[in-house]
Image 1 (tube, rainbow, N blue to C red):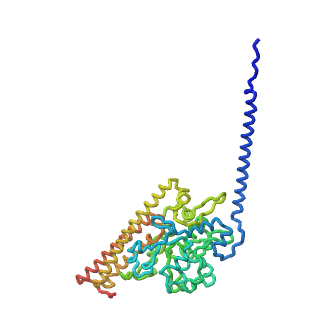
Image 2 (cartoon, helix red, strand yellow):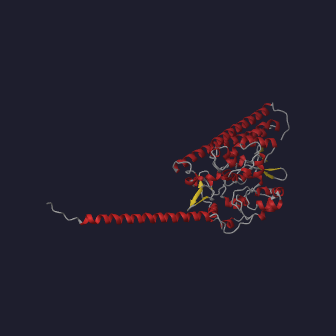
Image 3 (cartoon, helix red, strand yellow):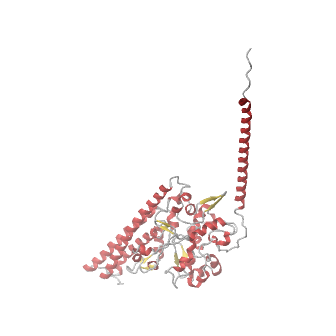
Length: 449
């Protein structure tokens, strides 16, 4: 008969150990689930409460600090536009004289205010501050100049009327202007929905047959920027701020519009050509690019969404995407930051090279027209060269004054600069032909300057 072996103490204890371990593990899991549920509920509550206004914002309240009581995240981010120490290869917020860095611009804009003072712009916080400081401001400036630089603009338009506000003059309303960009410029104070506060944009879109009231929210995330980041001019004796978009948004459409209207910003001091000064046409250039065709809005890159806790908001620190590649670019482009930066700078470096080539061609054209005048060529002989000078300078300026150095629409920027170089060289040839005609006695009859 086999003997019965006593049971090992370890075997008798093991089931209890396993049971205890399972109990502890279950308790940890349950505690984790409970903590997760509490966290989720907390974040839901945070998300639900975050848009609620602590205090109502009265209509026409322009001080961003008042809005900031209800929307501290957005306010704190916007106030970062005071930072004027950010530098990128072709921009940033550090103020410097572009005329000192690029002296050829003095001759290209000879006879116009930009040949006296032209600086790298700082952030939106400085929109009014820098305007009041620029040497381009004088007693002849119309009130229309305040449209995009002063938060008081919508209020003053209501009080004065659209025509009276634009006609100005600026110095009459200057003491009423105290703030640059404001929340009120882009948002309805009751609903926080994006809105258009500047009549010039509405008028321009209506002229194009576009009803802005039917715009999607994604479209509005570009439209609110297009109230100011555009080419414009002052129409008629009342100096109405007007966007030259009736024929379309590209540079050829705009050139044709100005030619048909017979408009000029100034007469070039060296060549006598009737000139156009293009202003920051970011929206027009962006509209011809791949990002616009893909439904990407200005805000997607310059005000990308960020998360703070459970809340997703647009980053109101408006700045170059080069300083924020992670949020601005990598949401869609899954390459590394180094790769994306290289892509951007490749486009900008090549555009900058074309700009330099166009500037050299423009200077040669100016020299040739000036030489023809000194040789005695009359207005009839110089008219073809002057018109070509106008076309070339307008196109160079369309890229030079657009704040992306080609990135908003690389192929269009290259096309425009190719045309600028071509027109400038044609102007040079026409001027040299006029000089030759004078020297050989074959100059056409016509009035002298």
